[in-house]
Length: 120
Image 1 (cartoon, rainbow, N blue to C red):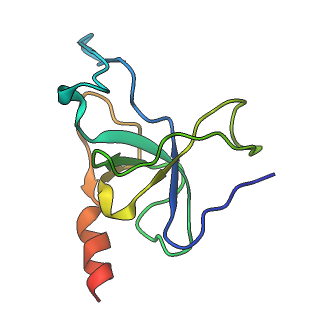
Image 2: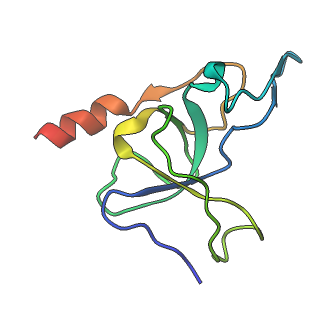
């Protein structure tokens, strides 16, 4: 079975909500639920609806805080057992990376492309 997003929906996996260790060995502690945790998060794009043309599955998207749903579990043969998925608001997409972000930032803006097309 496969889940498919409709219209302008974006489904993401592998959100960075836990502790992170950079390539330099710096530990960045989990901050969800704290005032300091109100920050954007990187998520891997799982699938996109037909109206989304600025993201592709497998890319990483930097999502503005609060622009995603609670994680939910669905049966899909592309997901691991018990893996969570999040629905992301397209207007909350700040940046895109073709590779998983590390402690070096190498991103291009997706927000401008989306907003520009939205106003045409």
